[in-house]
Image (cartoon, helix red, strand yellow):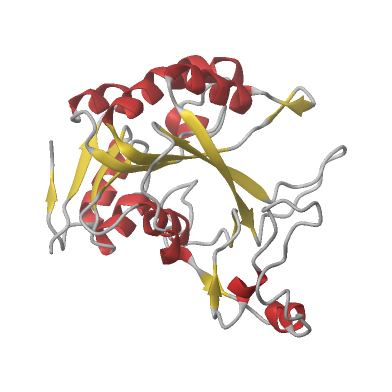
Length: 274
């Protein structure tokens, strides 16, 4: 099996129009946050962020398969002493476009940068918003299971015979927990909080995220030979990880130096240019 990486230099608002309808299994991306990285991407005012992003999200809705998933890494910023609402506004407007806001994951940065502000603390987390076109979508939960851990020993040590069969709701409904499902298991499903340090092997970009972040979502929402898209490719973390995991990938980057950098990194393996 062979995976191909298509890298494109250009503005994703234009280049996305060249991608076929319903052809992408997973979109994983982190657009420039409002007013961030002005020296490279110019920065988008929080007040204009929704207006700027909606034409892009419309194209993403078109290229995503009906059973695909869109993961958007985004973060609020403080403007004039309060949290700006552009992230919430973006979610609401995307729902009007036809997106379903199906889940929200939190990336807990275990080693976030220190700092001091007079009226708030340092941010130690970022949002990863999950959007879908339909309520039924591909999801391979077993691929991201985690060790059950030592907590199970204490929690399950003193189970009664009833608990080992069924823990019925005290109200008599059928919504009780089946405790027996936790017996004799070495792995369980994870939470929607992902704990990762901010360090990554790629130090060629001011906002590169750790490879483990896209890797986790690629495992969860795709299988080998599926197609992963990052319309804000940056230093190429998503497409490089996707290729290593035998997924086809498409990366779009407006900054030529980053585009060239990624092309060099994937040179030892096959890639295609539109």
